[in-house]
Image (cartoon, rainbow, N blue to C red; front, side, top):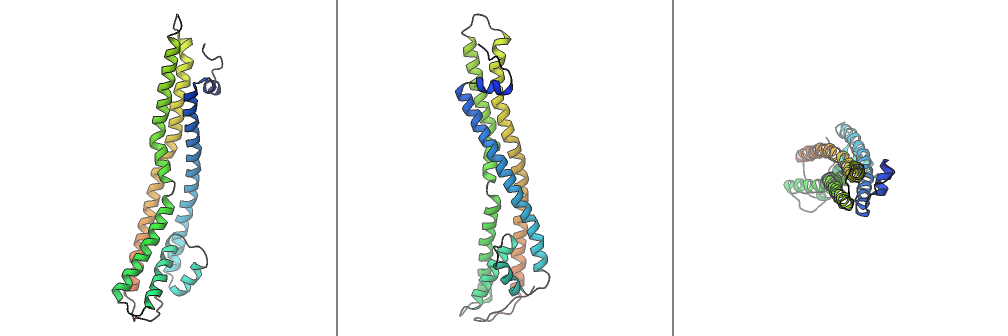
Length: 232
């Protein structure tokens, strides 16, 4: 017998157990996807605001030793974290017994690259999950639809006369799985593409800062065992 309640929730409740499991998975994926979308939106917005502020402070001509001491009291992120890693390594190597200028610059660049990779990992967190939801949800929904249609036609084979009234509810409840799959996938794909572009732009600017700061240090006079404060 076809379900008497043809509302959305009625069709979901009347669906076969496997289709209901598929719908539950898609609903959970959608909720987690939207949580990740809002979390990444907040983090990337903060990163885009912090970087210009740090660059303005860095290029203002302020003593970099003072800037370093100010930044390290908090938990620096983005460009500030990369700068602190580089300046800390610069100071450590300057105090070493015998370190050539090139070895010093190479060490500073490696320290900043490590910090840059950490920032990239922090910004890209949860993006793989959005990509997974965006690519797999339509297929999960399609599986639920195919299974629901199969169940509807199997039930239809047990009656003497097939009518649209008998088959329509079963087809409708099966198609809900496809709709839920698309509902989970579309926002995830849009958010992933947008956030991935934003992350790449930020990483490019961090990478430019690594080169610029390295060039500044390259121009500084170097004496092994000395402690020098580079100026921008």
